[in-house]
Image 1: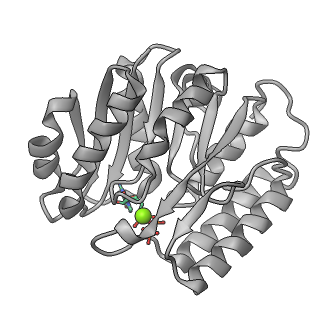
Image 2: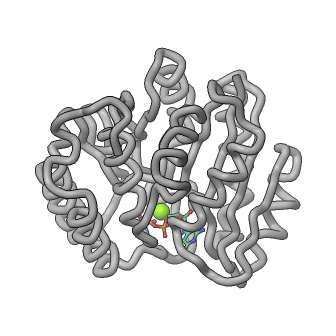
Image 3: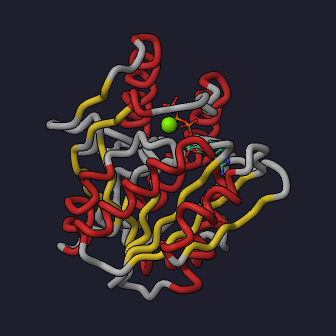
Length: 254
Ligand SMILES: Nc1nc2c(ncn2[C@@H]2O[C@H](COP(=O)(O)OP(=O)(O)OP(=O)(O)O)[C@@H](O)[C@H]2O)c(=O)[nH]1
Ligand SMILES: [Mg+2]
């Protein structure tokens, strides 16, 4: 079993020195071989070159988009690159490039996948999880969006839906790609990760959460998430997949 990290990055050059240290520590804690795919999505600050310099010791592949294509395209192309070298039992780890993902908890996420989970969510909203210093406005919006998504899709037992910090069994992702004609995310922006989660859950795969700390105070540089656009994206995903999509978990249905 190996880990393949898939990291979307847009203008995150100044975060990569710390990220390299964190990833090295996390890989050591998991005691598994690892590879890394960084998707440089039209960055203008030299993110791709900095990644080659700082993360090059990690069997790094940089997927370069000459212009910004958005989060969903970054994940899609990153997953495709990861699946080229991953066998079904390997684990594909997604996290943020801005050091806000709690890499200290990765070994726990990986343990859940080893115990049979198909998708493990790093969850700051699960009991035991936390958020380091975020603003009240963002917390209210994100709490409201979470409740709306949970109720609409009937996602019982889960507390977080839009986090990028996840561990995917590679064989599960292969099945989801096959079942969706290679397009598991029709939504292009940040809401695409909710779409992927709902599809995975609705197909009957096992989704579990591990509590993590969202390290908001670690972020250097600007947030790329546009709140209004993302909320509109949630509504599009809700209409696309329909209410109660996760109520009846019919094996392998999308
Ligand atoms: N490939 C790609 N990555 C992106 C894009 N937008 C953001 N990202 C990356 O996705 C991750 C999450 O973006 P953030 O700007 O941190 O969004 P967020 O975590 O919801 O917001 P904050 O809590 O303010 O950090 C970071 O690693 C970004 O570099 C994009 O258009 N393409
Ligand atoms: Mg972030």
